[in-house]
Amino acid sequence: MKGKRIALLWLLPFALFYIAFQLAPLIWVAGNSFWSDVNSRWGIDNYHDILTSPFYLQAIRFSLDISFWSSVYGLLISLVAGYSLHQLGNGRFHRFMMAFTNMTSNFAGVPLAFAFIILLGLNGCLTLLMRHYGLASGFRLFSRDGMILIYTWFQIPLGVLLLFPAFEGLRKEWQESAALLGAGRWHYWRLIALPVLSPALLGTFVILLANALGAYATIYALTSGNFNVVPVRIAALVSGDISLDPYMGSALAMLLVVLLTVITVVQQYLVRRSYLAAGRS
Image (cartoon, rainbow, N blue to C red; front, side, top):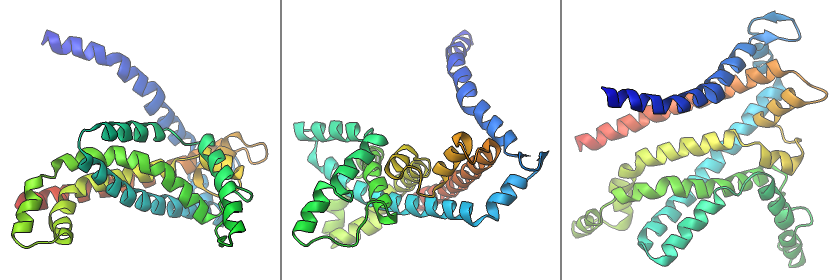
């Protein structure tokens, strides 16, 4: 009993830190989201304005579109990359690649935007090179496709780090047994490997989706806040010189929290079903 009390005392600083920097700001944002600065009253006016405004609905649609596709592409690439790293074993090259992946997972924000401007901007080195050889297409870095490309880039290292441990659950004997029974590689992955990896895939997808939905620095540095997504709109409402309305920004932030909560609940339900299906089999 005494040992549990000592352990609780050691957890007290973490609990205070969590309350001060997680729960308290969330409660403050949730409470202020119901105050309308325009109408000077409490209520759901901010939520009504957001859900009936084509401008804010466009921001939500763009955020979901970019986040979903960048998470899908990032997950698929991370699946292949994680499996390849797993197949390398524990050699020197494997350790180098894991260290490199860990390092590049922090390469985001302003440095990433600056790097892509140098490479694929209107006068980027790769853009000029492709234009010189007649390979220039209709791709533009500052468009929807450009945003998806950049988001996918910083999703890949995080996806690899999250998916790599899941491959330890795949036993080599399963593939050998499947091959002895006449199953090809595609049947092995479709019927054995992917069902086993499905909880990790779903969990990683949700984390990548949340990571993309909350990304702010990269897209702001790249477009100077001219691309209409939810984090840019929240920042403009909280710290803007023209459209300053932190209460509307709080309502937008709460809608983002609700959206992520719904996605997480659905993900947990699907993971639970996949575990139950695996247990029955």
